[in-house]
Image 1 (cartoon, helix red, strand yellow):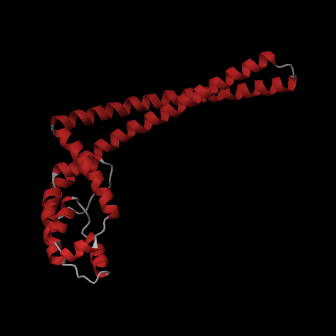
Image 2 (tube, rainbow, N blue to C red):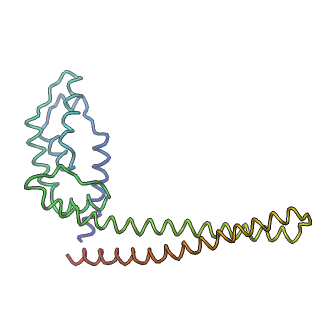
Image 3 (cartoon, rainbow, N blue to C red):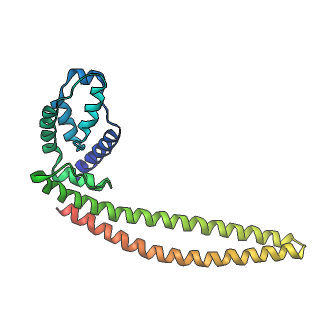
Length: 209
C-alpha cells in the first residue's frame, strides 16, 4: 500500500514538474480572479511561490491586477497538503533536486521523506547505470567477435599478402580490445553486484518502516 502511494505521488511529482516549468495563466483566469484557489493548487503541486510573479506579469498585460494576499493564503494552505513525508519521499525518488517550497514548521517531515526517497534514487540509479555500461561492453564484445570472424573468413580466401597482413593486424587489434573489454566486464560485474546489494538493503529497510 505504501509503495502504491509512492508510485502515485511520483506520477504527481512528474506532472507538477512539467506544469511548473511551463505554467501560465489565461486572460479568463485573470478576469475571474480566484487567486485563493490558484494559490492552493500551486501549493499542492509544491510550486515555487515566485510563480505568482509570472501570473502578475501576465495579468498585467491584460490590464488586470493580481491579488497577492489571497494567492499567498491559498498557497500556504496548499503547502500544508504537499509538505509531508510521503510527498517528500516521492520527490526524492523522482531524482529532482530538493524543493525549498517547504520551510519552517513544514520542512522537517518533507525533508526526512526527501532524504529517504533520494537515497533510494541514488542506489537505483547506480544499478541502472552499471547495467547500461555492461550492456554497452557486451555489445562491443559481440561486434568485435563478429569482425574477427569475418576477417578470418576473408583470410581463408585472400591471396594478396598485403591484404592478409592487414587482416591479421586488424584481428590482433580487435583481440587486444576484447581482452580489455572482458577485463572491464569483470570489474563492472563486481560493481553491479555491490550496487544491487546496496539497493536491496535500502529496499528492505524502507519496506520495514
